Image (cartoon, rainbow, N blue to C red; front, side, top):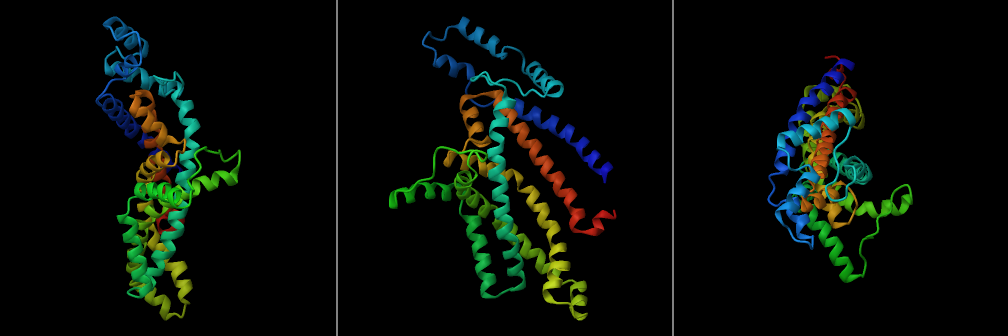
Amino acid sequence: MQTYILRRLLALLPTLLIASIIVFVIVRMVPGDVVDLMLSQNDAGSNQLTREQLLATLGLDKPIWEQYGIWISGLLFRGDLGQSLWQNEAVVHMIAARLPVTFELGLLAMVIALTVAIPIGVYSAVKQDTAGDYIARSFSLLMLAVPSFWVGTMITVFPSIWWGWSPEIQFTPFLQDPLQNLQQMLIPAIILGLALSAITMRMTRTMMLEVLRQDYIRTARAKGLGEMLILTRHAVRNALIPVITLIGSQAPILIGGAVILEQIFVLPGMGLLLLDAVNQRDYPVVTGVFFVVGLAVMLINLVVDLSYGLIDPKVRQR
């Protein structure tokens, strides 16, 4: 197992390298220029000398391959993701301040998604073609059809019109006031969690239906085992392996949904940081956020692969 983990970690390095090159180049191809934005806010005008000096100050006068070499060497040897072009602050520090908010939102959303999806998916499979099954399937279709950003927008607009209530704008860190923090994070986490639960619920139902038709399930029933014991010990554990794979593949969707909901509910997380950086063409911040997000997605998928052995003993024997 240790050799397998080491191999997977080493395999992440070339993937991250290629991803960093792609992001580094594409970010600089976005229409608009950070120098033009800065000069447009300068009352002194935008003469050629000023532009050249600003390019040299920001380190943007060098060829893009040389800029990438400086960036990747700083990352590899010092763990440095560069400096923000606007705030002159280390990108590592900016991400470290925002990452806990996005992590908390994603964790709460995933817990809510699994709490809703797996029990309902199992129930829907066991009660196939009953009224409960139809209700569960309709609910999952509804969650798939309704965009999370639309739900978030409606929750912030209509309650304020009808009842004079709106979500808290001033963010409270978890360590400062855990209860107030959870109250702020609960609504966006529920919206994101329900959106994620839809496809997981349908996958759980499909895999449970397939497992319940297997010969070993019929054998277990013939031996006189209770239905609950058959479900928990045999059916659910075997059905969860494809579901876990699906959960791992939903990590980018989870992060993408967090970007939108952080903007709607004014949560100072990675999503809000990324949107501000894109609007300002703050290249080091955009590259740093994408690099950290890519690393997080790869590590999540590694954890998913390792979790197979905990669910299915046959995997541990390979």
